[in-house]
Length: 388
Image 1 (cartoon, rainbow, N blue to C red):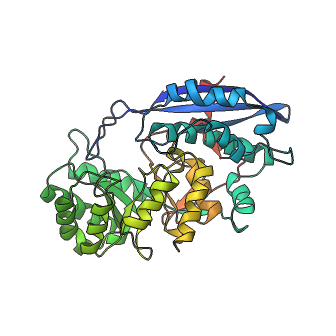
Image 2: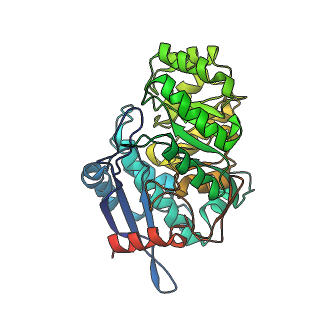
Image 3: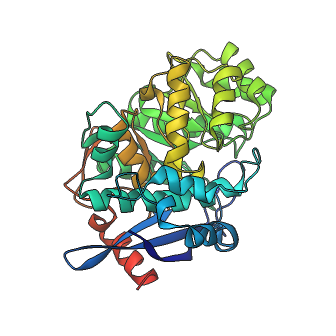
């Protein structure tokens, strides 16, 4: 059992949108294909992977470090002890050989991109959806094809006024979402409050709206926003300050009584543990948003979920960032709280299979094998075009 070809391509997901911190005008991502010698119905099984938005392509890391290590590995270092499938854990060790501890930056994205393709490959060989494989091997055996999802958007855009923001949010409601997320921190507080109040009138309840500052605020501004927004009783107030400023988050949690959310820019089990230890996160009401594809992949993510359990956090308090099929499968197979989705952005990578049904912010998946890419027509067409 061998991986006979590895390809990497860079694909643009650029847009004129902005959050409080960055523009997406030059955003791109890495996409990989792992072709195995395993055949089903006469065709080689191929696993595909990519990484979430908000980070740039990691082509050089993949081509100079991680793909060569995988190509040079012996077969025994890639397959499980039974010899029946590839081993994500063994492959992860191959990828991380000669890597020093710490420095969880862009390399975590490179490893996570390959890791996603590995899990797609493994579950295709098993001929089951990834979420079923995860539930049986790593979870409690229970899985579902129905999970909570919320529609993320509400970015700043040149010329985008409040009526345009409301039109965007209404389009998500029309798709079956009841919970939405919008950006804050890119304009003065008074203007942001008008934007929030406009969306609240549309969604009807604070619990249906999340706001995201993308790490923009210092402590004083974070608290100021918190005091102004507290009467709205929002579903959550996300990433108020720098993701590694645990003290800021802890101080904010003392003054803001409603739920906070953060974690999407923490890329290791160690950083995730430190957030839980020192970030003031409250296991009863707050939300963790660790993104598997950016944080060394699912092998590392399983360790993070164990750390949460060790600190008496429920996996249902995790709603990952990213909006991709890997997080959907993790949520469905390992009892997470749901998943973020970008209905109109970062396509065709985001979302779920085309025939999925969204109702009251719960999505029901159709039958699929592996990650489900092949049931998403535009994504499947792109993958075939990139790796013909």
